[in-house]
Image (cartoon, rainbow, N blue to C red):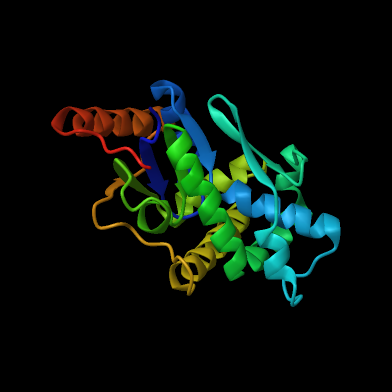
Length: 230
């Protein structure tokens, strides 16, 4: 049987995807970064020359063929019969994904794909509304946080950029603006589920965060029957 879900939410650069992948690997679960689905729809939208303001956009999105292929520990996104791969992180997709992902039909389509994955796989899923909207009955919910300054340094490191004071200040400001937008958006805002365990990763290394989540999972599994979705 499949259908055990661990949700990991939190603001940008809090370490969600890195942590989620390692937890999935250690438990033999599949890992899915929900943001890749929004990027995939954005990528295909750009490929086909669609505009999210087009009157037919909602119908196009609802008819999209989206498939998740298991390549442990990850679930790889195929859309329209194609696997975008590294193009999901292109500058062009990054520039448009925010506008596309705000569309109600896009969020509905992604929600459907995520919930189907939660029934088919043992899943560690990360995002911003996983424990509140996508999987409110997840077996374990975690909410990762870190100081804006530390998150800025991590993001600069991911991009191979130097940690100059000016760069850190600009990235910190950008992340705080992103936090504000994510927390106040009308659809599925970023917030901690009431039953989520909050972990501050500011002073923790990746392995320490993973071990803490594994301990929480072991505790949850030993204290009660772990619910399965579906």
